[in-house]
Amino acid sequence: STEWTSRTSPLKDESLPIPDRPRDKLFSALRPSSVGEDSQRRPLGRSTREFDTSLRESAMISAIVLAAGTSSRMGRAKALEPLAGRPLLHHVLRNLEASQVGEIVVVLGHEADRVRRETPLADATVVVNPNYALGMSTSLRVGLRAIQSSAEAFFAVLADQPLVSPATLDALIARRYESKARILIPTYAGIRGNPVLVDRSLSGEVEAITGDQGCRAIFGDYADDILEVEVTSNRPDWL
Image (cartoon, rainbow, N blue to C red; front, top):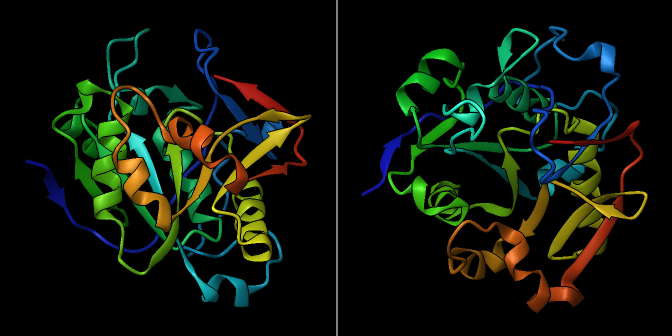
């Protein structure tokens, strides 16, 4: 059974790369010198840049933060890898808080109690995936079942990608409103990255994914529903 620790509302965070991890692409609008700086906290849904708030009010976007895994390099929770003196998860949440995301659900697993102690999670909805060792798909499933029924779409956010900026998140949300695409993927110089924004209508397909796979597992079946969104950022970072 899934352990639930329900907390609601805003959030806070940001971060940096782990060297032995050439797996996913990461997009950032942060200057390298700004990493770890304690920027002003904002209520959930308030962006660091000018944004049309009428768009935010027209649909609720959730973010599922996948923070259940273990670092193969350190043998501990990936979410607790340090960057600028703080856990990666701290930085990820800070960036989500500064975006137009309306709800944040954090899925824990490995060392869940330690993650709770070392990362501020009071303003998030926290759920624990007891089957995290069976792969990313199990955490996605737990997260999907925890988001609010009013959510029209959701981000699948990796807890070890701290340089995904609020600007990138907001660009994907804005293009969803304009295009009505069901899957939106950030790209940099034509290279696909993370996080992916998926329409709630595809939640059944996402819940059917098995093993250590994320939302990309359904891309082949829904190629016509995909919109690639070019991100104007300094560069993609590799984790």
